[in-house]
Amino acid sequence: MKKTNFDRYLEEQMKDPAFAERFNRAGEAWDVALQIAALRQQAGLSQKELAKLLKTSQQQISRLESPGYEGHSLSMLRRVAEVLHARVRVTFEPKEKGGEMRVAEESAKYGDRRTKTKGK
Image 1 (spheres, helix red, strand yellow):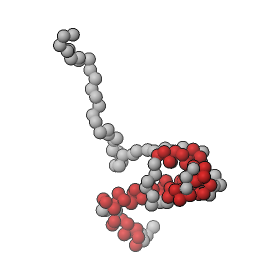
Image 2 (cartoon, helix red, strand yellow):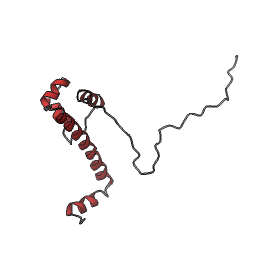
Image 3 (cartoon, one colour):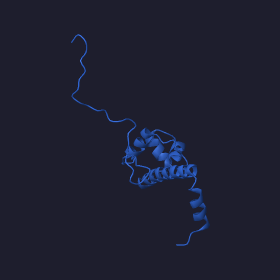
Image 4 (cartoon, rainbow, N blue to C red):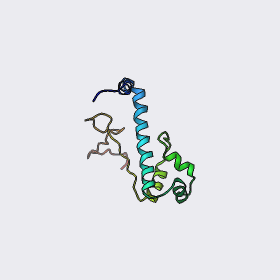
């Protein structure tokens, strides 16, 4: 398939790490917004009706369904999921393919060496 001007432009912009980071975060926000909106619509609810069930405002539901909104809290997502008979699942994935997950601290090493304290 032939590349469009936009494809070429995006390809060039993605070479900038800062742009690529913002672009990827925007994609994640789109995913969350679209999933909430789709679940609400499948349940046959308006934003106002969902807001009433969650004891919040229609404006808050509109924000949650906005692709530009990044203030989702886990507790609010859980409330939305419960009302819409769904579940929230968060996954962390390595940034690079083949990369392994690492923790911030090294594993504690446990052995059978014990230190003796004075007087005991």
